[in-house]
Length: 306
View: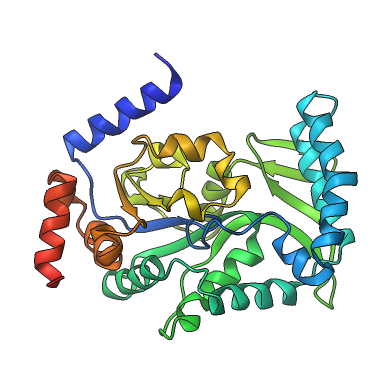
């Protein structure tokens, strides 16, 4: 049995058993989940330097690094570190991230039903909502602090887990402290952590004591986290909305085959009409997943009169 077959069997069994509990913590993926998956790597740099300049960097510097990594001439960690160094050379400022995210919100690039639903759940149940990103932690914190406000709502979320750069007093990135990777490692002074390790560190630092089954994960594909914790909600965007990079990522394609406890399909149809209500209902009361997906849709449509 292949890994994906085992994972599909795992989620089928968990849905059948329906032993979910209401989450006390919701971990929310940023890229492709909160921010729609049309965003490309180095989108922020394109805003500053122009597409032509970034395309040249991709061709002359990033592509050769990628080939070295594929040929195992350099480790994956070295590859990530070199990409970060290019970021810093291009001039990374804290203010750039805030402006970039504000622009995304203004352009309608946020998953509005999900963000609003998370705001309601946090307000009603005091559930902690923490954002996850392989990008910089400060980017996740900007989302945590500003997402609701940019949608005309009150309140903030609870923080973020992600990579860390060192910044000077002017807010300019000057070095790398830690990066999110596939395995825990260290290269010189730079620490590499899986998301699982980074989450564990965050919980310890912030004195969050919670059982794994009391944690929900909302993502566009992170099967490993969805399996580890008690509830996994998949964001399913239409393929036409995915950037070329997202379409080429195997685990994103695989997630669509059933690697989740429930999903909200953002294609045209009933799921889109009831997206916010579905996020709110299931994250508030996961026992609803005892219903079939079709019955759940009917229940929500009747409940909310749509």
